[in-house]
Length: 187
Ligand SMILES: Nc1ncnc2c1ncn2[C@@H]1O[C@H](COP(=O)(O)OP(=O)(O)O)[C@@H](O)[C@H]1O
Image 1 (cartoon, helix red, strand yellow):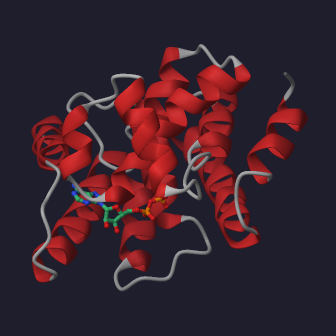
Image 2 (cartoon, rainbow, N blue to C red; image 1 turned 180 degrees about the vertical axis):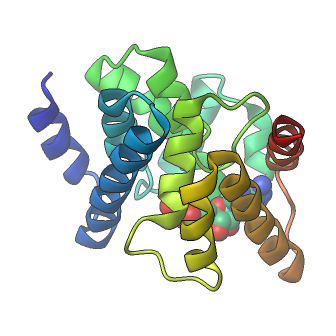
């Protein structure tokens, strides 16, 4: 399957607003890859596919998690986290994407993980700062992204964790672990 076919298949999974966001993430991921000497082609592919399952029905995502032995702990956490793992499963099964680095960048783009690869960092950060994002503090993240992937991601995870705390929601521990690990990398 070539990139053009993957673009059409991905676009067909989501409403126009999410597709616009996806294109913003692609553009931003390529820019970050160029700035930090990352792999532009993998960044583009992972960014294109990162939200593949975002608009899927909750029941469909739950079935994929249960039937394919995706991490069961996802089920007790925010459903917003599900699409990343389900999306990695979906692009592999539906489109034969086998590149482990690309699949991992999709799988961990929302939560982060310990030992994030450069590709994980690029896609996760691009998702936060793409031009269509407009949340308090996003411009600071865009400035930090010019200095350091790690500094920008720590600030990004901090903002997500702060919002979750303000709303009294559960925090998926992998994000806290990812944040701590990034701070250790900065030392
Ligand atoms: N560690 C976490 N624990 C719980 N929920 C989280 C965590 N990290 C992210 N989320 C949830 O996921 C949402 C992020 O989803 P979003 O930015 O829409 O993802 P994407 O744009 O990549 O599809 C956050 O607003 C929050 O509700």
